[in-house]
Structures are given as structure tokens and as C-alpha cells.
Length: 145
Image (cartoon, rainbow, N blue to C red; front, side, top):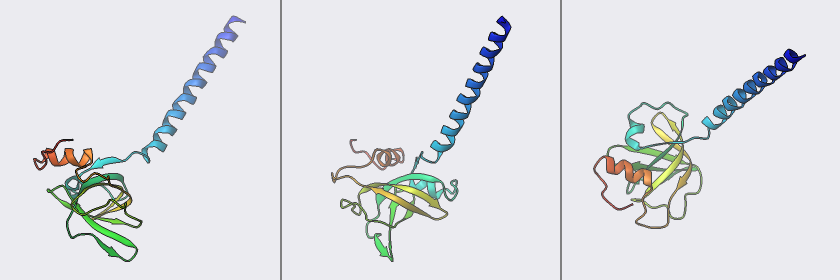
């Protein structure tokens, strides 16, 4: 009788371990699509990122690059090392300006970034942390955070 209780306990522990492992794997698979890794225009232009990967890219909006192309708003962003074309089919934030730092979330598609969200802040001195860090790493930004 004692070995029967021990066997049931072991079975329950094994079943619980399998269930916990399955839940962890499922969480990892589902969370992978929700995670957006930050990349700079220079990193995107390097060609090491495949099409369809969900990313967050940030940079300064290039002066004179913003234009309407049918239903798309097309503009370029730079980190002064490389320039990337961004396409956005939606309303840009009211505070979006050329020459300002922005962060866009979306998908890299070979030679352009297709944004699903564009983020901008209200302070004209604001620069997203990721953008400031990328510019600072290249020696092009010395402002305060």
C-alpha cells in the first residue's frame, strides 16, 4: 500500500512537471511575437534582419523627407550613420515633426520599414532614450537625457 501512494505521488510530480514545461513553452512562443527589439537605422541597413521581423526603430526624421504617397505617409529616419525609409498607413501623432526623434514599431521589409505605430513626445528637446543612446554610441549626440 505504501508503494502505491509513492507511485501516485511520483506520477503527480511528473504530470505537474510536464504541465509546467508545456505552459512555459507556450508562453515563450506567444511572447516572442510581442517582443520588439530596438534597432537603429544603421543596424537595419546592415542587412542582417530578415523581412517580417517585428522591431522597434528610432531615429531623427530627416528634414524634407515626409510626404504623402496615396494612403501611406512616407518619411525617412536617420541616426546620422544610415537612413531608412519608413511607411506608415495611419495618422501620425500631432507632435510628429521633421528633425525630431521618433520611435516606430513595425516590420522590416527588405529595404523599408513598415510601421504600425509611430511614437513622438511633446517636448521639442525630447529624444527617445534608444535614439539618444544610438546617436551617443556613434559620437553624434552629447545632450542630457
